[in-house]
Image (tube, rainbow, N blue to C red; front, top):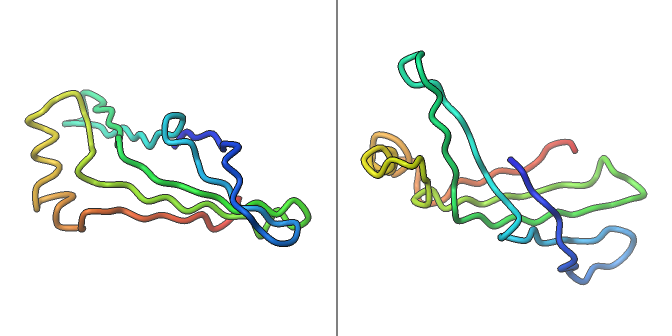
Length: 103
């Protein structure tokens, strides 16, 4: 996952601050082998992410990401629709959530 933090700082108390990721500079990408012969590269277009940064205690910093699963793009509309089906992403719900454990 590539990302850039923005200067859209959220109000916070103390040394810890909350930051929203800039959607135009944030990407969630992945690659998977297909039939062991080719690599299929994919991206999700609809992502929301923010992070909490504590410079005094970096181990307490965190990132939370929410991905709209229907926004998957593989550059192949038939494959995209198949991945959105109940066989794959639809069965997991409209959103995928992730959070960092350790930065």
